[in-house]
Figure 1: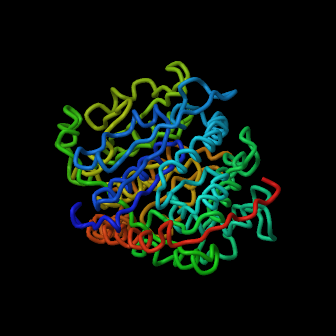
Figure 2: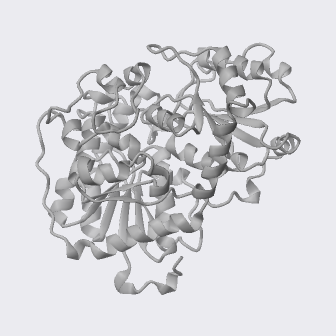
Length: 483
């Protein structure tokens, strides 16, 4: 990696980062910000005041290069006070956060005009950004936190914008692989029914598919948190660049996190993990966005009990729910599993737990960031997706023989305690799961290869240096009707 002093001033970049208001999006943007700053480039990380206060502290060695820019949201009907991220809201109120986010168009424009950056890396949400960057002559990159396979499934931007024959108009259209994807990748019906509001206009007046299509069509390049080594079997990086998007698609690597710090030790929970056999514990967690129903909590708990496996379950109450609204564990569950399992209510240091040698598998919601963290330590997966791209990620991992999905009802998405227990035992201890465990261990060599992923970051930087503001001429893509 280049030292700070080795980057010549005339090659120094000023990059604006503009993530969507979800911590699962802000954290990878922040991680890439730090990678750029480590190489001597200046970063302006733009978000709302409360979100910036909740982000991890920037290391002192990088603080002069990473500028945290606060743009407050305007009061918006339907959006609770102090709600500035998806974690603050129930799923059905996120549409009001999108409406408030769109109100940042003016403040962001003024910031870009006054700060003269070389590039902006943005998320899927700002469908209004392209005319602004065109007017300013500012190169833009859509930084996708979906992997290439998931992006390929959603298809070309015109299909997302409703402008061609490949436009999918009903939920069932998403339950079959599209003609441009050469392997079995599709949503289950229950997944797309849960997401159907993302296909239509919401309180913001714009659908999520329109936002994604706008992000792809309006940017100069697409940057993906992935790498050739992971995507090679599906060939989706090449598909995106040559056939689906017809513009540069640049993998930035998986951005694996640094080794967990000793200060993240967990006291009694650490002692419990130390007492378990190597690779025997299944870690159970569903991220910051998923809200489990009472039925799901019950079936998961009894399934864990029936599996007879050691487990570490992070059971986080969503901030959008009261204690009375939140799911309860079955009577006597914790007493019956005492010593064999841990239930951690609230936040837990996920990377620290996944890195522990006693952990051998991960029952997960299939968020891409969580998948990367687990693969770094060679864990096989028990797959239980809920939102957004998670179902596609689950299909991809199952296709790659890295995990097994818990069987669910095709329409309701419900699952049984027996299906939980069977899937856990298959992945963790059965002879049938030996191939999954071996594949996951093999994957750890690639995901944890820091030098490999640093090279991807360096390649992106070289591209941005060669195509910075003074070297490009831009024009806005034409807005289409039918948002």
